[in-house]
Every structure is written in C-alpha cells, then in structure tokens.
Image 1 (tube, rainbow, N blue to C red):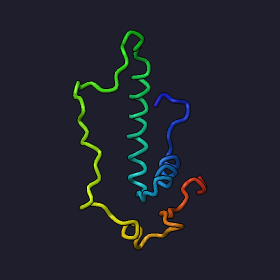
Image 2 (cartoon, helix red, strand yellow; image 1 turned 30 degrees about the horizontal axis):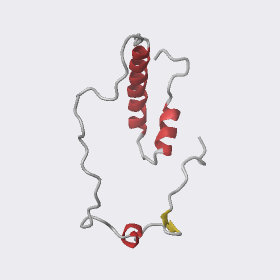
Image 3 (tube, rainbow, N blue to C red; image 1 turned 135 degrees about the vertical axis):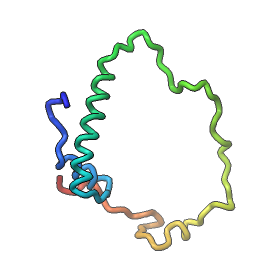
Image 4 (cartoon, one colour; image 1 turned 120 degrees about the horizontal axis):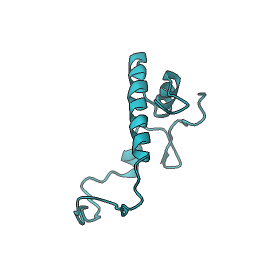
Length: 103
C-alpha cells in the first residue's frame, strides 16, 4: 500500500466493532490485505485526469426504474408489531451506541 498510514489488524477490528460484527483473527488479517488492495486501486483511480469528462449520475440511460411510491397495507407492520421484543423508548427502537466504545 502506498499510503503513509497502512491499515492494521487493529484498524480492522475497530471497524468491525463499529459495525457490530464478530470476526475471527484470520478474517481480520485477510481483510487487512483486501482493504489495502482496494485503497491502492482507488488511489490509482484518483490519479486519472477527468478534467474533460462530463459528470454523470448514471450510465445505463435507463429512466424511471423505480416503482410508484405507494403504501402496501398488506405488508405494513403496526408500530406495536415492529417494536415487539425490542428495546424501546417512547415508541422508538433503542440500539447500543457504537461511537462511545474504546478504539
């Protein structure tokens, strides 16, 4: 990897913790290599001149590929059903904070 700060197993473990993922040491070591390859590839792409390339939001020329925004009452859960069995506070889901953890 060409970046001054290479990714470490500790970085991967921290990211996994933030995402609430349990990964093994082997998976963590594999992810270090894979993410370094990804960062190297993106770094190479950043060096390509796009000065004369027009911006685009999509490349397939497909239009209106989304369904009409309608409520499907047959698939709709009530708030009570959606929150059943989950920690809640004043009608909202309660989840554990991920930003207060130690690195």
